[in-house]
Length: 138
Image (cartoon, rainbow, N blue to C red; front, side):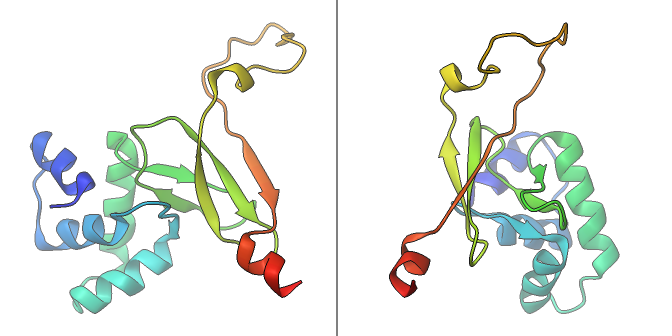
């Protein structure tokens, strides 16, 4: 059983066939799929799954805190099942590959320490560069 499925089962979340397939598609390391990508992959496992069901399930998973909704390019929202471990993202500027990078608590505060009176509740850092495959092609 996948880590996400196990967490959902432990919470007592009703796992219908559709919810199960969405959770299976999201399972794995460095998973950052768009809703359309989740629908496409879920459709291979359960052809009758609707786009609306995928969107609703993703919304529920985000509301439960079991999946993160991230936007690393300012366009499509992506869904990240690595919601239990604080992390940042590393994005290839060429192929758009996304990898999770463990968060370092010392780099999560603004550099000057001046927060302009804000009480910080969350930090999102996205590193950008070329992945090894794109470097080899350059």
